[in-house]
Length: 220
Length: 205
Length: 197
Image 1 (cartoon, each protein chain N blue to C red):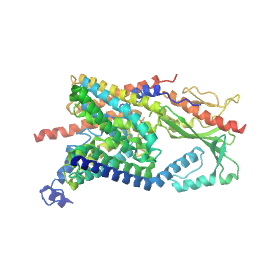
Image 2: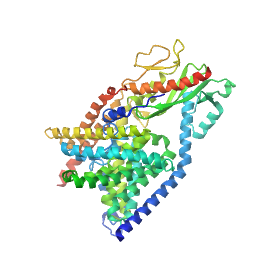
Image 3: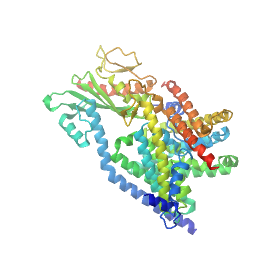
Image 4: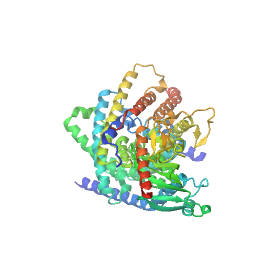
């Protein structure tokens, strides 16, 4: 694994990703994190993070859709007429979303009911659309896959963090198992309602900025 | 012109491929989705009747428990589920009936279970609702549903109907404490429960 | 017979107690990016309301008279978003011709209305909640106005915040989120306001 990474970094043009794989991965997951830095895909970050389990499934959904749509858009990028490219992107994204939704309903019914319409709303998730338009349209397929994974992962991790704290503080549980004993902790129900979501997201982004901030200063 | 024609063909082909793929996926998953929906309903009926169930029971086992313990019967135009475990030897222990109606935000559906005297409430479950989370949405919580257990479906003077009243003011045998801030949802739940109750009571007479 | 929730009640509730942005979190992206100026926010809010009410009606008709009878319900997402995209394209052409100033002010945000989760969300909620035609109109209108109200309120709040001393990591989006949370709490207080008859 380490050798492969090194090969990426030494700009080996024969490498699968044209040498930009690792950079793309780091960009998508950290430096240009879709949720915390680009501030995209917020709707779902607020809606499904009331429980950690929901956050993880939504993260998985986004990785699946982003990788799928990035791959397909990239494969078709030389044949897609410029004028209808947005409609084509939406159609491709919608197809992957619906596929995920159907299989969720078939094999993870309870979760489908928990997530409700928010799986379908991945179609309008700015992250997926943004990556298709800004990256997949100009880059080769394998690199596009890496970008999809990176952005999806970056999103999933932030979602998991928010979900973790909201469920913990809002119900005292993680994955439905009691962690903060009801004997001394009164669950703060506000955390699992709307205002709690906004607070949690704001604080997480703020902390993210605080961590990143000094690093950016150093680079200057 | 040629560019437009190409765009049109492209769009048509893409559209067709997507539609085909999705229809195929829908077809493949349909039996599983159907089974899930049925299993959920079966689970709700069994739960509301307090039929003893193992933890982590599978959909197939649910179906078996249902077959062994429950019988369907029409009453007053509604389907009711009569619970009679094998040990009871034919004696009916409880009855479950479905109720549904418009909530504040969307349809509310659930099951109401009555003891064999057809007067005392054994339990209630909600399996579909779109009410405001934290307010009307609280009807699915155990705390609210427990308030129904032991209450009767008619008052002292034998008038049929339950009343969901202001929290803390439930006194009579057919009154149940509502949820603060969710008056409308409670009103609608009351209305749809009474409609279902009236249907089966009237049939008996 | 049971009384249905009137379209009027749904309309009022969609603005206050079940605000599509403050309760259902839909439409956040343009909310964040665009809510710097009250005037732009008002323009965007109006455009979104218009698109929302029209597409909700269109999607209702298409769902109940085309998709359901033909058994094509699993294509609803694609069909809805296609309708929305086409409609936004129409609106864009309309605005460009009749109000070049608004067109210029909205810039990139006008085509981005297509991917505004609130608009697709409104159609999806209408189906999930099994609204009738009249109820859908009330809901589409209320949701749009509710979204517009929230975005204008936040624009005003952000303007005020420019003169506050905010720690650097929290400037911009983070503090906007926290403030929106407080706004959401305030709107929760409307809960007892809506009653039938």
